[in-house]
Length: 116
View 1 (cartoon, one colour):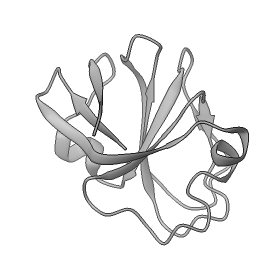
View 2 (cartoon, rainbow, N blue to C red):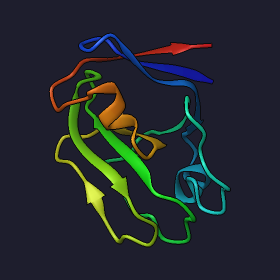
View 3 (spheres, rainbow, N blue to C red):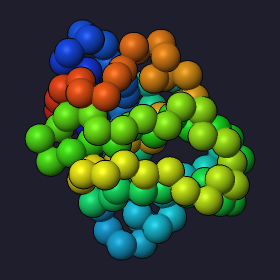
């Protein structure tokens, strides 16, 4: 598990963030998952765009470059949306809907990843 912190804002995006790094895990993502609770997330690496087909809940998506800087945001992406992406993204962090607003995360913010 990984803890994802927004160093710029001094907030925590996810206390326990799972990882999807294999081809199969990246393709599966959160499909079929019952939902995310506050403090949970999924880091998908490498990844620069996502869809929400076959998902049951809305998610916030944070697009991050190779320097751990936020390059794009999609708030409350509803189920069955065909595409969200950001130019220059290396990985994404999928979070419960509302996390972007609560943490004040903005494009340009610096993130930090810590193994827990």
